[in-house]
Amino acid sequence: MKQQNHLIDLNDYSAETWGKIVSLAQLIMKTPHVYKGACTGKIMATLFYEPSTRTQMSFQSAMLRLGGGIIGFDNPETSSISKGENLMDTTKTISGYSDVIVMRHYLEGAAKAAALTADCPIINAGDGGHLHPTQTLTDLLTLTEEKGQLSNLNIGICGDLKNGRTVHSLVRALSSYSNNKFTFISTPELSMPDYIKKELDYQEKSSLEEALPELDVLYMTRIQRERFANASEYEQQKKVFELDMAKLKSAKPDMIIMHPLPRVDEIAGEVDSDPRAKYFKQANYGMYVRMALILTVLNHDIDMKPLLFGNVSLQKCENLKCITNYEESLPNRFVKSDGAGMCEYCERVQR
Image (cartoon, helix red, strand yellow):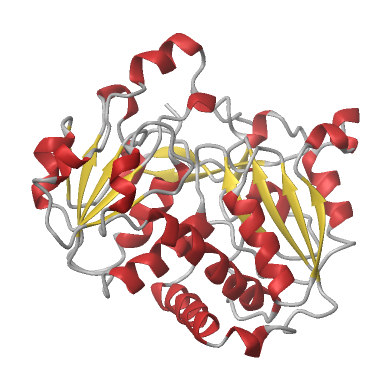
């Protein structure tokens, strides 16, 4: 089978590759007419097993602006999945109809599993609480445009850091640039996972007010109701952190506020008119960076690394949200991490 140019995890590629995609997005923003027919005759399939507004529509808008066509679903209950078809059969079949597949799934490691048998590139549009690489490309473009740099920043990340796939991907990417520092602002129950924090320059705070004066960037996230096991756990965590104008008085005048959206109640509406609020511009940047990404994978401008290289094992992943616990045909694979085995799909270190 021909090797495809998948984008599963942004950290599979060099910062130089990310920079090329961001630079292409900037070029498209300046000269959109040049790229109007760049994907004429190409078809993109969007397979969204989870609800989405910005990611799905920005990908669809990106392909349409490039002159291509779109197929897919945003409700698996209207597809053969409702009849019991497994993930790999679905993506294998649809990859025969399309030139690129964009997939969002509620299980961690699902995009990597789909890429094992797909006959076209797979772009990970979010796999459970694991990763969200195209949001990270959006964030890199936003920082480049609004701060003019990707290094020497103090980045505060606030909210649900345990389940926030957007911030997991972002932290891993920004740690590749020099002299970046991180301030993680959350409750103990929603703190950043250890596998993300490893080898970072970071501090942890429980107060937004305490962290704000030091920050160059504040990245707010919502408390994700859909990641909680029950409603009572969610109710205990929501509204713990809320950004309003009173708190912003202590922030730097050139700090920028980002948010992957949707927001619930973590940013007051009054903040929208503050010039530091960049989250709606950030959403718009997402369309341009996804145009650049589609062109990059279709033009084979990514040097793909092997999808899996760990050892096959009879052991099952302990993460109950891992795709391997739902797709029986998937080979369980683990790599060594700090003397233990780490699942190659969801990156959960086994006890």
